[in-house]
Image 1 (cartoon, helix red, strand yellow):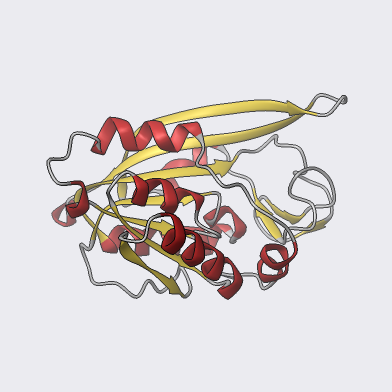
Image 2: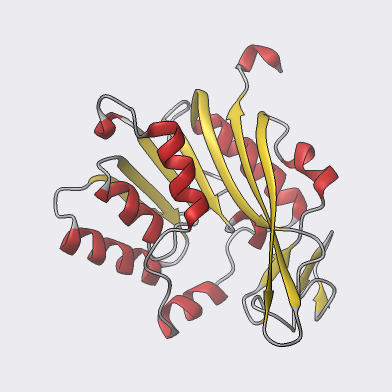
Length: 226
């Protein structure tokens, strides 16, 4: 499974965050704010949803591409970009992450903000390999993904390796949710050099139930290396 139609219902029925997370802002600032021509720096977000991250990138002058399976989410993203940043550079594409409709070496940076975690472990490995294909040599990958031990893991209906249709927590009712073990990170990103991995944990509600996530920063490996 690469894109679950449940997300079309979710995007159509509720509002979404309008601003990027602090970790993504830090990634962009550290790696790309000094670019002499920001419009020449091309980002692609995998599973962009209604586009808060693309809005931030476009506002900062970068070229922002997004791909998602939901026409509703893409419509929301396009409407906001056109209204608030009328001269933005980039494109929004409806499609699947396993088959990115872009040539090799197209992008300077890729963003996965908890989108690939909605796929099985096997498909996630394939998606990251496809992401590596469209990333330029030396390009950067930002990943934010749920970690094992997160609230909801092990609840609901099993759906493969470390994956469930969870019945509790913030992921309940949002289709397949996959949780990543630390030792699995090199397997998922085996076409990349891992530069940084940080584990974040917050607690939700009075029961002190943890929401655990990995923030991963990686760079592409030269094709001659594999």
